[in-house]
Image (cartoon, rainbow, N blue to C red; front, side):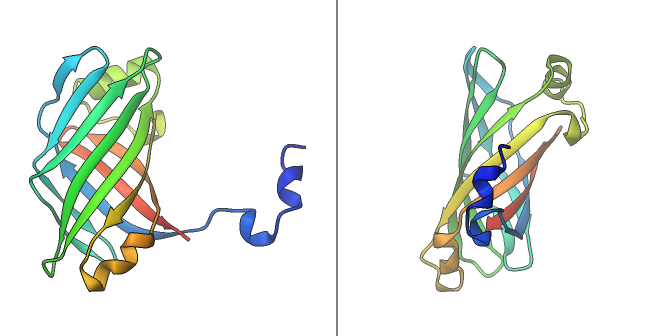
Length: 160
């Protein structure tokens, strides 16, 4: 019965379609623990690679994390991407990461954990004045994350 509401919609509004944008791998320094609910992660670099754009993440990123009482980590990230041809793109994203306490403890220890054992999703957008990438200014991106000991890896998709 819950899907009945979707049946009345035009076909274009019944599903969400995406197109691969890029895979991004971030390096992170040890978290700065400001308190039980606030952690700050500094991102000194990384890479991104996709069909339409690729390059490096510049040493200027920061991730302000909040940890709720139910152990859901909220992400609020700002990065600067530099494409292979020198264009600068500001990227912001927010997200959520959570899972069973034992899995989160393994992640906190720096262990490699199968991404199917926890939830890690993001959404974000871009800003640039570089003409070849101006199309990004109108894009909403969604992604799935995977936390490795050296930093997160994201698969990002353009929402069509």
